[in-house]
Image (tube, rainbow, N blue to C red; front, side, top):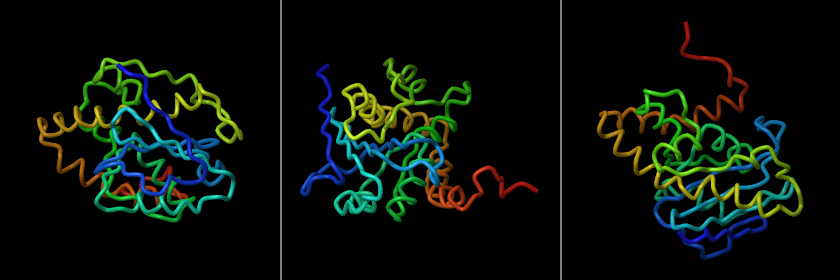
Length: 206
């Protein structure tokens, strides 16, 4: 298998870049609190073995080309744990991402034989592939990212299309497609609740 092609862009995607009908997306932030920990990097892949990484300086989130892609209703956005990424994108770009497929939600709906739904676990079982998480705790706000950081960031999106394809089969097999799509449609609201301070509150509880 050829090494992935990883391209780093500053502040926005280049004009005219076409990534197809579905794109895998992930984000790197300074932590897991979108109110406190700023967005540093967005990774995108068309599932073709290449990844485009967009690096942001603090306060510089204009990115018109990226915004147009994220809000294009004809382009499916594939995430792993979309709840967080969609909230971060809403916080820093002020936009709603749709339509969405979340591999973590799909995994929880069909892989009920396990409680291991991380990206590394999915890749290992579904694709028989090992994904390193060594750079997960890393300074993503550094002016110059290391080659290890770039490789790690790219690995989070390079395989999501293949994982989605396997989960699609399982969703249909278990007759849970409709349930999954309803959950995906709710994700922007779930992200809005998180940003409004209801992250740990079950609004459906008695």
